[in-house]
Image (tube, rainbow, N blue to C red; front, side, top):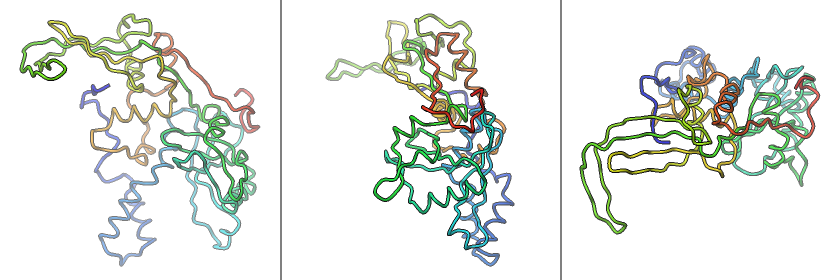
Amino acid sequence: MHFRIASSEIDHTMTKKTPKDADRLIQEVMAEIGWDADPADIAEQVRRLDIGLPVEDEFAVVCAWLGKCLLLHKLDQVQSPVASREMFQVPDFLGQFSTAVTPVLIEVKSSTSRTLSFRPDYLEKLQNYARLLKLPLLIAWKHHSAWTLFDAQQLVKAKKNFNIGFGKAFQHTLLCSLVGDVAYRIGAGAGVHLTFRKEKLVETVNNDDGFTETWMMRFEQFRCTDYNGHLIVDPENEIQSLFQTWDLKETQEHSPTHIVNSFVAHEDDGIQFAHTALVKLLAWETLDGETTNWRHLARKERVVRSIDNFRDALKLGLKRKVVFHILDIQPPEMPGFLSAKE
């Protein structure tokens, strides 16, 4: 889909204004490099802190948006005494979810490899910290654009390191059961259609395939159809936003007076997850050429303007015959720290 929302509706996720917690960022930098440091070095360090740790911050935003997170707290990993580093490694997050009877510890990793690997000493230090607090240790893994969240006990020792393949991590993911993620599929045939009226022929160019015409056109109509091809009367904002999360295929129909651009879901599209849909929704609300600042988003009350409760939007899509499947992915065995109702 190549059409964009009106610029007046854009809630920028990237801003060049001074961050609200600039005083804290400056204080952290000064404590690290000293008050006599070069101003340029200070400015660069503050900029790096403001960018944050994109993978960790992205995971925090995903958790906040999926709706089951009561608290996700980044743990300070400055340890005292120094000797404690030989035995303990502080994970990235402490989290409490409405679906769990106890808090959990979460270590966040990103890798494009099909296998995630931990050194034995590093994993042991993480587990020592978890045992100290008597809390479960989970691993959040971003593989390309997809997230999984699994119990660290799923890691298996290979020749040297403890490993897990993406297939196994996906099979045992707790992102749905614990955090509230959900998989879905837009029904084949559902889509949006833009009708333009031809007003003036600007140019005709002959080529090997025939000819190409360039027209001056006027936008005339916007329509949404369900997966049966029927018109959706007065589509809600959530329905339109669901289409924005899907990779719709574009086709064109020409008549002597009009051109209709259609963006439609196809049979072989597979499934999508709420956490990957979030990235697409944010792209619609971000100006071209800018990137998502996950640290800033983690400090906002609303992550996106379009959808607050994605699961409710999917249920509406199911009712409107736009969404064909809603799937909750569960692991083969549910861990004991999940509440009984889950």
